[in-house]
Image 1 (cartoon, helix red, strand yellow):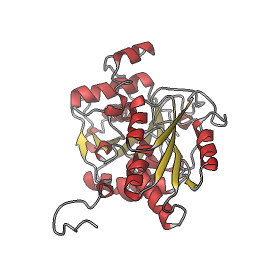
Image 2 (cartoon, helix red, strand yellow):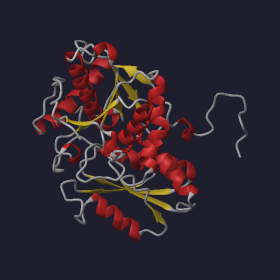
Image 3 (tube, one colour):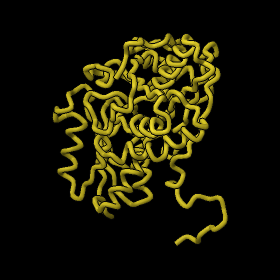
Image 4 (spheres, one colour):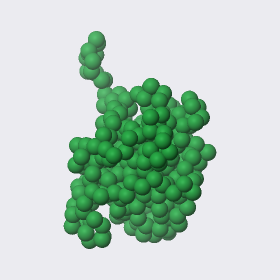
Amino acid sequence: MPKPLAGLDIAPSVLELIGGTPIVRLGRVAPHIATPVVAKLETSNPGGSVKDRAAIAMIDAAEAEGRLQPGDVIVEPTSGNTGVGLAVVAAQRGYRCIFVCTDKVAPEKVALLRAYGAEVVVCPAKVHPEDPRSYYATAARLKAETPRAFSPDQYSNQSNPRAHYETTGPEIWAQTGGRVTHLVAGAGTGGTISGVGRFLKEQNPAIEVIVADPPESVYGGGDGSPYLVEGIGEDFWPTTYHAKFVDRVIPVTDADSFAMARRVTRREGLLTGGSGGTAVTGAFRIAAELDAEGRAGESLVVTLIPDSGRLYLSRVFDDEWLESRDLSIDDEVDLSPPDPGGNS
């Protein structure tokens, strides 16, 4: 066993570095908007995304309950980031991993999962969840076929939102000195928005919790038809999404999500992915609304950047890829206040 390094400011393992992420003001994205917008940078987690928090919480709970034991195999459908988080934990705990992704996932994510030693199966994105080719069905089949397989099931595992209730929410409250008035974030499994939203509303029920969502996603009333931004929105309702903690859902298109990711990167120096672009766009639209209502001086909008643009260099930051999908390669974004009729 390694010798303890008592008295030194050195983490005993990479898992101890999950959480405690910094928060920063976005002052150059839209300087004409007075309401302050600050972003919590989940890119600082060791796996590079907010999903590290849910990953360790789900694995810890499964181990404590005896559902995951040495020699077991983790099988999970993922858009990439949860898989990376699980792979980080698995590297420390000695588990083998099999992850199922859709072909919408950027190749960088697939390569990253394999770099951690995981097996990756890629399935078509443009199929119904019940289709046997879907990544949900494929993951279920692989779990059934693999001896000693365990699925954390991030879409129903309540350790997912609980992780954010216990860590992300308290961090935001402390970092803002309790001055946060609005939280704007994307929702994939819904774990982050549900856990943080629950915690913040327990501290101050007046805090507004807003989901920034692809228009096609079911959260905002869409039918789940395909869209390009990765990791957020859904074509079904996960039980880890707790709508009672969400006040509004506002739509943000692929075009605005990608343009904002490029704007944040170029104006703030924060390399941000498409879902981060969605969240930041939603945050500044809420800020513009607060400006119009004369509430800038009393408001503080917090958003959450879930992962880094390093995973999307061949997508969001590739001009040819954007042009091939009839998307603009500039960073112009519609920051008009959202439709007041939009809600959850």
